[in-house]
Amino acid sequence: MPASYDVVVIGAGTGGYVAAIRAAQLGKAVAVVEKQPSLGGTCLIWGCIPTKALLEHAHALKVIRAAAEWGVTMPADAPAIDMRRVHARKDKVVAGLARGIEYLFKKNTIAWIKGTARLAGDGRVEVVDGDTQTIQASEIIVATGSTPRGVPGIDIDRTRIVTSDEAIHLPAVPRSLVILGSGAVGVEFASIYRRFGSDVTIVELLPRLVPLEDEAISAELEKSFKKQGITVLTGTRVTRAAATADGVTVDAQTPDGRNESLSADLLLVATGRAPVTDGLGAEDLGIRMEKGYIRVDPLYRTSVPHVSAIGDVITVDGAAHPQLAHVSSAEGILVAERLAGREVRPLNYDHVPSCTYCDPEIGSVGLTESEARARGYDVRVGSFPFGVLGRAKMAGETEGFVKIVADARYDEILGVHMIGPRSTELVAEAVVALRLECTVEELIRTMHAHPTFSEALGEAAHAAHGAAIHL
Image (cartoon, rainbow, N blue to C red):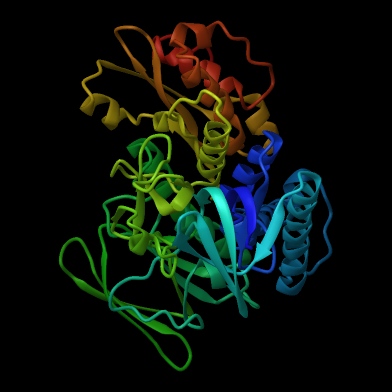
């Protein structure tokens, strides 16, 4: 007789483990199937946490190198990065957080079943870990996540041509690095390794960096990257890449049709992520799929009763789906509450915050200016630079700005986009504003403490009404 649970979650990433905890809180008997040796999934083991740890090290190096400006006397030797110690600290952070999830599993009486899961029908899940065992579930939640996506014609050897999975563990700082793709992964690694001392070239097929962000954000980031010494090639197509005995060669075609050859120690392929569904048995079970993704409705139900799916592995009614850890967690909570009989409502994906931890940081939520105009809004825009603020001058972080996109007719805030210091934290205020259908006038009347970076949001609201105080 197989072990039986109310809910079986496949995958222990930020979607899966959060869904499991919430279901257990609501009285469900829960098991999680995870094949990795630790809990936490891509975000904790290969993604959000280790990359942001590396970025914190890069920021620390930036501050130390400017010690003289702060009146701090340094030894004669220039500060250098010790990758062995960097990785030791990064891995300590990751391991501590993974142990924290294990503690939460024990606290909430969640069973961790180690192995690879396959859907076997009628609520059965086969788990292979050397031997095969079968468990029974009243409800199944698929949260298998995603993996770095390759590029046709480029052989990722994981030595000279690598993905983000390898880039977080490089034993030494490469002298030169070409990065293919300028989404969050690409620009974050560009910031890390340029600060560590690499010559970095970033190649983007589309006309601008971070192409999902507001155009003004893209322009500001490109300006900053070039100032930092990062070579930016936008509108450029890579036609060939090959590993050599001592590096990699990359052939590319520029926007004007010229062919260009690049040489570097490493090529990082950062062109997005693909869903993990191979071997899951989803298609055999009759689950509707789209290009490898599991299709779900707005409450994350698949085409097969009692099987739900969340996170990077899904498409919601065929629409593009943000592959973000906090999105997966929100979806996991919603599904757990639905399975417990709670009233739930679909998530509003216009209210998803996007945070990119490059230098300078990017935080955004809601519609870009072009998206708002495409939807037919009469758009009003206000911007305010961080560099005017006293706090920014004190911190020596004066790059960037806050931009508010609003509807001129009703004054409702439609989007907030920022690039500059603490943007990944400051965006939280904007998320609340959109959630509460805040108007520009309400944000103007909201006091922002002085001196803070957050003053830029209040000033951008004033600017949207044509009356920025300090500009």
